[in-house]
Image 1 (cartoon, helix red, strand yellow):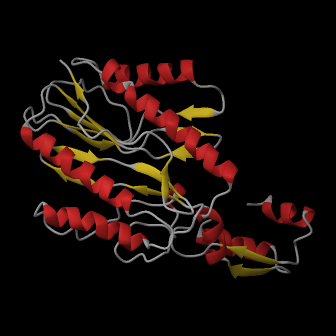
Image 2 (spheres, rainbow, N blue to C red):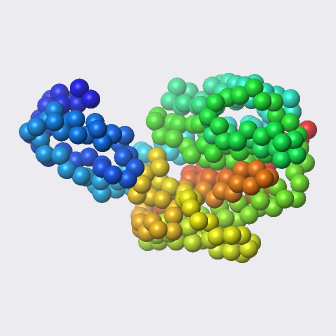
Image 3 (cartoon, helix red, strand yellow):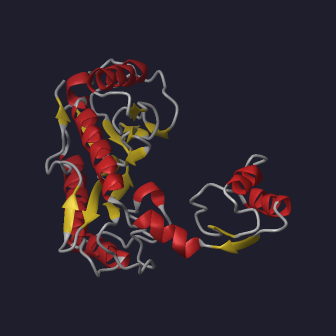
Length: 293
């Protein structure tokens, strides 16, 4: 924080009108206390709320940004696809994530980053030995009947993250597990088909709600089911968010259900084009990926 006034001075902006994002998500990461302190440290500058401008700049992307996200997402799908060939019963979580990290390191160069820890969720109602959504690698060993979900890929390319979520099952899935995966997948596809210029984020949510109603599920009362790049507040797939989609925006569809059978979440990333939408990677498989035991 002490360096910021000097940086602005070198740019000739110490007496300028400076805009920051205030309120909502604080996308740029500056806290309220830091903002107030910075204002004291730069008494000759005018500090204003530039939230609408900043959020728009972070929601409509340049071709270079889109390409970086595309590369990150494609690498994310690749590492997710390695899970069935790596994971085996009796393997500890440490062994599993370390093998994934090594495979990624062997395939991708220095512009890529892969964090194999975090956002894993493992549930096994039969054994009662579950490991709910966690950030720290554990010593738990995988076993038959585990439903494994990852609500992030851990991959980024030159600073641009790939938020791609997937689910796997260890062993022969019971019918209820296949049912919930199917519901999640249908929600995912219905939401994706709604994406095009001129529609609202709430319209994407409504596409999800129609599938929810089709299966007679209780209406969701809280939460969103997709977002823009870096979770920007302007783009949020929520019934009360009526932001209109424009070409160049990147938005995800992320239906999710949690119950006694596991955590079911499938997230894909889409670019809004002039005429519709374009997936930035290979999409979630229609059938639940099963790991043989």
